[in-house]
Length: 301
Image 1 (cartoon, rainbow, N blue to C red):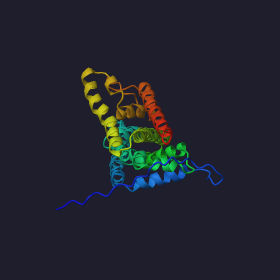
Image 2 (cartoon, rainbow, N blue to C red):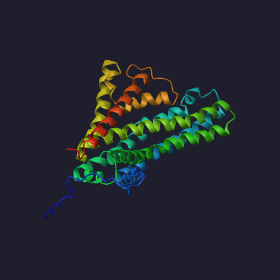
Image 3 (cartoon, rainbow, N blue to C red):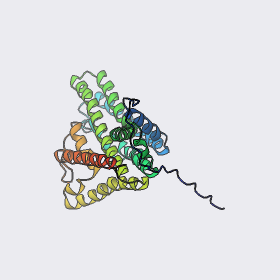
Image 4 (spheres, one colour):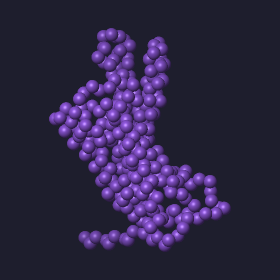
């Protein structure tokens, strides 16, 4: 069987055009870029599969929590060990565990955010876009928002679980339980934004660095898995949290415990939240500055 020759990819050559400046400029193009990026992300098969798989853990955890809630109410004090699994504990694992939204968010960022700018750089479309009434900040912001919105969808299950917990707390007679359930909702939203925003920012920054989507995706996979796996192994042997300091999943768990109001993990390999938060912030700021710097150089020699 003779393989058919590959058709050449369309490439837009830079002819040195300058950006349009005139009276026909629209007010903002950022929503247009964001919506186009979001739609393109949802059209990808791996994004659809990831969103579908992300629905199962919240359903399973919701059933487990409902049974636990019923048993604890029927026999208060007799199931103290079971009652220690608080709603915040379940939300944490729904978001930062490998079987929860973490892997789905990584897969969506890998599929939607990593190629967002790299494809335009490879085809030569980015300099062409910038000749239109489209600023660099609008282009980069639109790409980030569109990819981030697609990544954020996979965390909807954790938010629905917190709303389900609020409905159960509303049916109970404990005022403290109701207040805790109400506070859990904004805390869940905050952790969702932190986790998906970080993954999207790192992925978009890598996408702006290279014109090949495969390199951007490989870079994101390496930055996600290598510090996580190797850092966990080394930290186990040296009994210190320093080897896992650059591990995104480890940082998400540490910051997530603080955001959700859970007790700080006192294990020697656990990164303290007051260290994890600045490191996570530095990663986000550094990635953002890298993307801004790279886009700022496009079409300027």
